[in-house]
Image 1 (cartoon, chains in turn purple, yellow):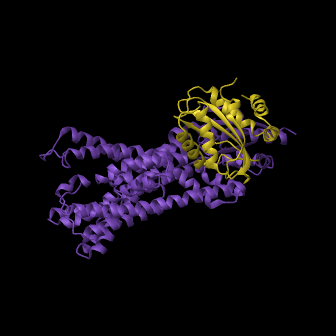
Image 2 (cartoon, helix red, strand yellow):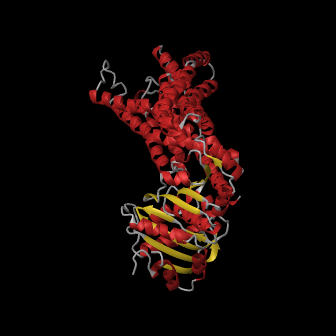
Amino acid sequence: MNSIKIIAATGCPTGIAHTFMAAEALKIAAEKLGVEIKVETHGQVGIENALTKEDIREADGVIIAADKDVNIERFLGKPLLDVSVAKGIKDAEHLIQSIIDGKATPYKASKKAVSQANEEFEGSAGSKIGRAIYKHLMNGVSHMLPFVVGGGVLIAISFLFGIYSADPDHEQYNAFAAMLKEIGGIGFSLMVPVLAAYIGDSIAKRPGLVTGFIGGSIAFAGGAGFLGGILAGFLGGYVIVLLGILFSKLPRSLEGLKAIFLFPVFGILITGIIMTLCVEPMSAVNEGMMSFLGNFKDSSPIILGLIVGSMCAFDMGGPVNKAAYVTGTALLAQGDLYFMAGVSAACITPPLVTAFATVLFKKEFNESERNAGIANFILGSTHITEGAIPFAAKQPLVVIPILMVASSISAIMTYMFKVQVPAPHGGFLVLPVVTGAMQWVLSILVGSIIGGVAYGLYKKRTNQKQSAMTNETITS
Amino acid sequence: MNSILHANHICLHNHSTTQSEVFQKIAEMAVANNIATSIEEVIKGLENREKESTTGFMDGFAIPHTKSKAIKKPGIVIISLANGVEWNSLDGLPTKFVISLLIPEDEGGTTHLTLLSSVSRMLMHNDIRQNLLQAKDEDSILHELNQVI
């Protein structure tokens, strides 16, 4: 009987201990079970003992024990087990035995195949798929974050020169401020495409980056906001996964053509068409929301505040938010200074919610989130709602409702205090011209702090649950 | 004598009962032995790492580690615990033997990182783990570890 050859890759975020412990555990187990193994480690010092093409070709099976990306796409068609690094340390023997017994499913370049293999192995499909989706989202958000912070802060600085300083026809015009706003604006316009691109990249590597980028650009241009961007990222990524399955029948000689020609051309075409159709109704959504809002403009402060708050925080720059904002500026032009006050309060609140949450619940956030939280004090204070997007995009189903409630509280209180805001933008920089400035700030702070506490408590709970869950899967 | 691990870096039969007490002890020893400059920073670093995932693994061993600006030179601090401490470990058993790896932020060279990873590798071997748990004094622990570093 030919001896069985197994290859493995291990990795962990710090890359100092667990990576190597898993590698060693696999080696010990392989020796015990009498199989040959080569383990590639993705540690702090980089990749060591790298697997060659030959290694991969000769291998009978692949074990990935990693909590970071170890370039899984190399192992196309190989029987593969994809588990956490902890599992590699603890269950090395079991993993190797599964490969020997032929229990691993060949890797098909689709997340589905992998999760199926793991489903069998871990018996927890739901959390695995959930984890994969979260991983893709996080990849997009972490790449988007610097665009939001960098662009946002530059725009905020330009407002210090006066909120109309970028308007050449206005007396406040300042060429330097206009340039800052222009540069920051480019950062903002790339935010949604970058989010989509790196969600796609996480799902389907470089071909997914391309489709995600273009899908995201269509979402942005079509006014679909960051929710459109998330959709574009997942769509772009899975279009490539699908094409991968369709193209898998093609002869190997066409492999090169696939990467450079077939994936980009068909991927972009399909993603582009679907996204264009998806953003088509966005202007209708926008108009519909505007006329809906128009019906309520004279209703009680509580109802109006609830609607305005929910709309502004729902998609932060998307069609629903824009509907509220544009209605506000239109009414402002007609001399209604009350309506805009609530819209501004509701737009200022979301970034402040995240800022307060990261300050009040420091321990529940990682360092980049805490830094982004500090920046959000600036972005919130200058009416740059987009600052909250990186936070919302991570757990949209929970964070967006929290932001909607927080913005509603701010808007309701603003309407109850009958605050008047004569400027369409600028946040707290326009305080000198606000009637009822103190009450306005108070309203916003109350909404933001309530939202911040709610968000912080939610983070705390999920963090606890997560550590309990990892424990569970490990000990299962 | 190897500057990464020294008899002074080892504390046997420590009476800590919680993970934070162990971290406090590690940090105090690190500062006392000129490995690090700030107790708080070392504790914070160890806590943050622990938040990502537990460093406790099997048979009562844990390897809390961190990379921090407050750490001036790479070092290993070893604490054996008189009573098992809850560490959320892989096999659920309380931790009795702690090997803490401390790495400077600007550790450019790979030599030390490799040393530290060889300590992690070594701990996967059953016989070495048994020897460490049964070690009576600092010297036998040094002897055991000096085989790899």
